[in-house]
Image 1 (tube, rainbow, N blue to C red):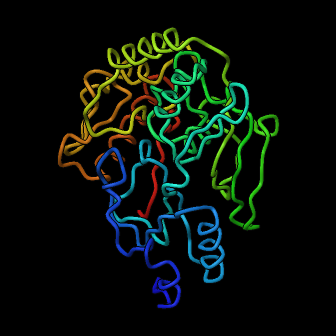
Image 2: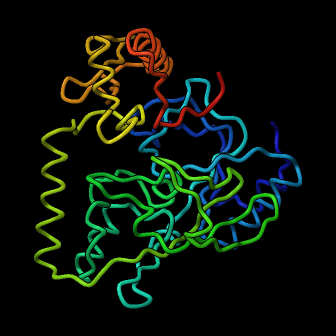
Length: 302
């Protein structure tokens, strides 16, 4: 889609053409975003969405890219990333944090620790930013976002207005919510409990060590590929049971340390990862009768 020069001028400091999405994905894969917009603040984001709606420009929101596979053919329309003013954490009441959606989850955990707020330690093990964590109801070690969330503030892309949604009005599921796709989360309130910094630090360290011992690190991966079926029926168990551990497609392979982690071993294409996903899904279905559901998101043109 070719945009009018006047549209570009309105956002020229933050608006780009043909941006490599591989730089924004933990897989380090993907084609180009046709257009890329980094919103400075809420006012600018709403203005951009208003202008995009006038010309029917498709918009796709991007978080930290920790669970997103961008296809090789890239993404049509404008990919939106929230800028610096969306990354903050502050205490607004006793043990209640107001957090920007672009804030990294581990930074939220660290801020809570420094301010003696407990029950947010698990966020130190969640990759990515808070906005994505809320949409996915991310969690680990018997904890998830639903247990600490109070409310969210979001922009409705259709009505172009900011709305607040209370936790009780959100339906949570395992690694999911019923929040509609037309919402862009811009901030949230989280509630912890009063704690002692040393004890919080110990619990956080224990979580991190547990993660390090069971999951690969320092590799090109987007974490858990498939959702677990239940606490006792993990996706990796089914992948292993189906004999898929040594499957590979091109330079896409399955981690030796955790077989629910798919890896770009250096020169993979997005299509290699997607083909490997489909190959494993098919084999697990044949061997166990289970249709695995994706936890990562696949975005872009086929």
